[in-house]
Image (cartoon, rainbow, N blue to C red; front, side):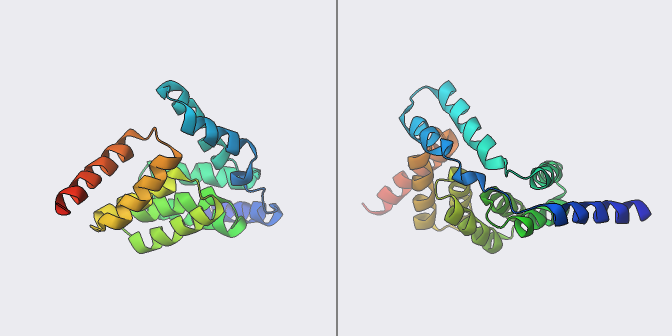
Amino acid sequence: MGRRLLSILVIFGLLGWAAPSFARQDDPKLDELFTELAETEDPTKAKMIEGSIWKIWLTSGSDTVDFLMLQGISYMSRGEFAKALSIFTTVIKVDPEFSEGWNKRATVLFLVGEYDSSIEDIGRTLELEPRHFGALSGLGQIYDIRDSEAGALSAYEKAVDINPHMKGVKARLEQLQIERDKKNI
C-alpha cells in the first residue's frame, strides 16, 4: 500500500511540473511525410514513412507525457485496460492538445466495447489531426461492428485516401463497396 501511494505521489508530482507539451501532430515534417505516403508505390518505403509518422505522433515533447504514453501502451498490450484507460485519461488531462493521447484512449475504449465513448475520443483526435488514418480506421471498425455501412464506408475511404497502403482497411472498403453495389442493382 505504501509503495503504491508513493508511486501515485511521484506521478502526480511529475505531472505538476510538466508544462503542456508541444502537440507533435503539428510537426511540420508531417506534411512532407503524408505527401510521400500518398505518392509512393513501394510498400517497403510506405511502411518506413508510416513508421516515421507514428513516431512523430507518439512523441509529445514532454518527458512526463511520453513516459505515461509508454506505460499506457504497455498496459494496453497486456490487456490491462482499466490501467491503460486511467493512464491515457491522465495524459489527456495533462496535455489535451496531444492527439495521440486521445487516440490511444479511443483504442482502449474500443477494446472494452465502449463504442460511443471511443467515437467521442476519435472525434477529438481528428479535430487535432484530421489526417490520423489510424483513428479513421478505428472509426470505420466501430461503424462496421454497428452495421452502419455508410459510416464505415466514409471512414474507410478517408483513411485509404490518406494512407493507401493499409491492406486490411483497403480490402474491407472494397468488400463493403461490392456489397453496397449489389444492393443498388
